[in-house]
Image 1: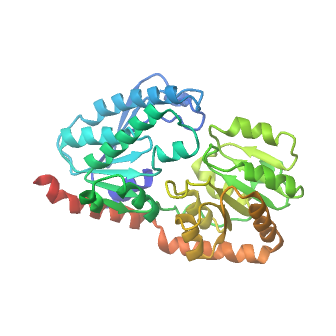
Image 2: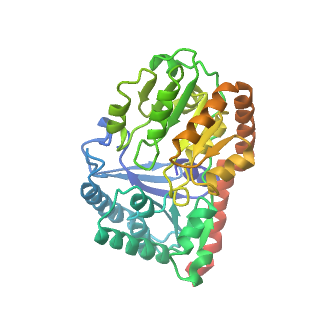
Image 3: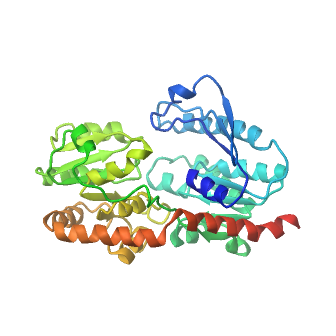
Length: 389
């Protein structure tokens, strides 16, 4: 979203952003930003208003997270409805409550609403068992349908997500759902030498490194990584990121000498972190391939590294890897297939290098920031006459 803002600003648009105070890395407001519920700053292209997200220390406590979203939503609405008429509102989910925030801004400020879906909620939470209460599921389903129907357009990352959303709205609204993929910063994320400073920080030498980098949550089949680490004791496995499942995962790998746990790094180190891995993993639990597109795939390809994905066949990531020739897919939650595919990649370094090069070439042509921003600009231009009527 940050890059989309800057790309749209470069096209001459005035933009006003409402977002959260920095909090995600440690699930707490960062020390430089504490002390105020709302902070607002002017920029050369508009403004940024940051409001308190009311984070809780326990990411698995759904009631606490819901209350946090509620508090954030209230502040965001109060800040977002201030001002005159706008030409458009862009709101992103998750959290799903952002759909209603966007709708209220649309009503008050009289601009068409584009609702961007990164992950289809509550489908992903239901598939992983994070939500089991029938009443909560019913409320979430209702909120999901209302959010889609109140938007003038819904943007999703893949054809799979489009099919999912279209099935939940009246047929007359199906044309509102558009596919606009995420992009990757190919000018910043680029192939680097594998012997990075980050290796030294993690106590890794020149041995092969297999890396998972991203959210360490319950949607990812990270037990496959643990299983593979036991099968390949001479290979170092890195799980780099944070999330609700990190503590339990750390317990599982405590006895394994070839597993390293790393936390999120600053954005300027992303290329270095990705270069540290010789092979990158994209595991997603069965049933989630059609409700979530792991955008880390694009970044891995930009870094020139091969991908081993364990994900539902026929979904977006397998299509990307087939189109680019940048990796291998196996069925989700299938440890034997996963280990076998990883073993083949580890023994064929020339093939891995070729996959990495093909992935870099493909992503440079298919997923640039300018192209994605232009697609959003064009969508808002299409919606403008409808909002004026």
